Amino acid sequence: MLSQFHKTLPRKLLELAVAKDASKDTIDLSNNQLERVDLSHFTALRTINLSQNNLSTLSRNNLHAQTVDVNIGNNPWNCDHRIDWLIDMIAEIVEKNGRSYFFESTSNQLMNNVNNHVDLFQTNEPECNQPIEAKMFPFSVWKSVKESSICQTCNCYLKDKYAKVGYRYVSINCTNRNLVSLPSRLPKNTKILDLSANQIRNLNPLSKYHHGELSKWANINKIILSNNLLESLDGLESIRSIVFLDISGNLLTEIPYHIVNKVLSSNKIDKFRIGNNPYVCDCNTVKFQKWLHNNYRIILDIKQVRCGHLRDELLLHNQSFYVGGPMIQQARQSRFFNKEILQINSLHLCPIADTVVDALDLINIVLAVSIMLLIIKVGYDFLWQKRTGKLPRFFKLNI
Image (cartoon, rainbow, N blue to C red; front, side, top):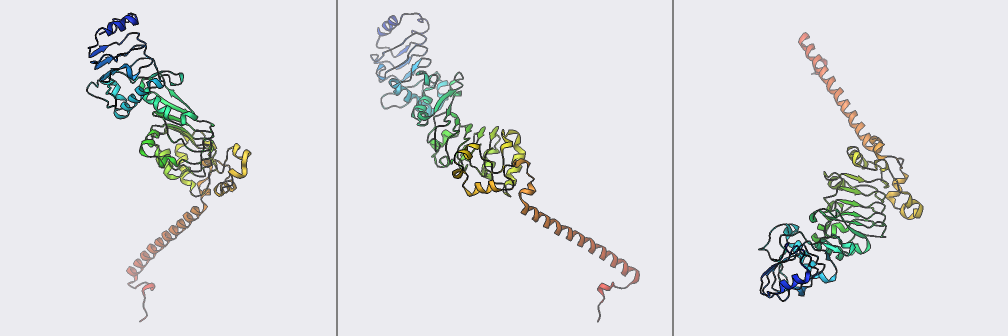
């Protein structure tokens, strides 16, 4: 064992000490200052601890093919192409076992690989130190970021870098990237997605993704879709973990009840923005209005939730294109145009329903009066018969 005690031992002397016996099956080189290591000549080596060193790279050829237990945690890894083989191996372990694998003793667990078997035990998931954009990314998350095309277009960065490895997450900023559709693939651990100021028209891809890809969206708790061209929210119900949602400044003429019920009424959601959309205000708005009354405290732009309201850019840049849809035209020509939905009298929103209610009230009044008159008539006839012994005139028969 050459750990801890040899923290100050010169690197070359340390390597010579290790090289004296190539028949070793276990070597502990942890807590030293090793910058490189080559143990390929240790043909009997099965277990090696390389944690707490200064290793930045490790070639597959540096380890013998029969080595099965390797601890590589807490090293300043340079996550370039030279350790792609190692990153792939870690990512596969995480995919199969979850990140808890790195917090438990797993000496009996093996990861099957074409070339060798490696078990990383009793260590946190290794993380990158270089390049700068990869700094502190866990290996499996960095692999996912590199393979995601959206991170070639947008900025993907790590939030809460100094939290435990399992609590760090990816934030993606795609503001003003001229996107016309949702990204087809998201990196692992993505929790914040900012797609504002693009030209996205719908969320349909969410309902078409297969289970594996949709699961990457399942962890998102903050999604910003403001200032796009959204005309529909179908597919949004696929994301059940939303805490913050911004769909303001789009072309939404309504928010369907199933979206209100499944997404916006979730106990998880904390705040959202839904204003600056050209909402149609009619009988169908009454339920939406009631929902606004119940949730106005968490709607950050409640005063901008208006009938037929469009954000200024849409009107200034290409009015005929953006406001040409029949539903939007209807919303903008309504007598409620630009009025706050929350402030409109619901009876004014739906006058047809109001008339129906008035008619039913009138029928109920007529029935109540008729019943009262009938009771009075029966009582009067009873008293008349008792006093005179004669049937009331109503019951007289001319025979």
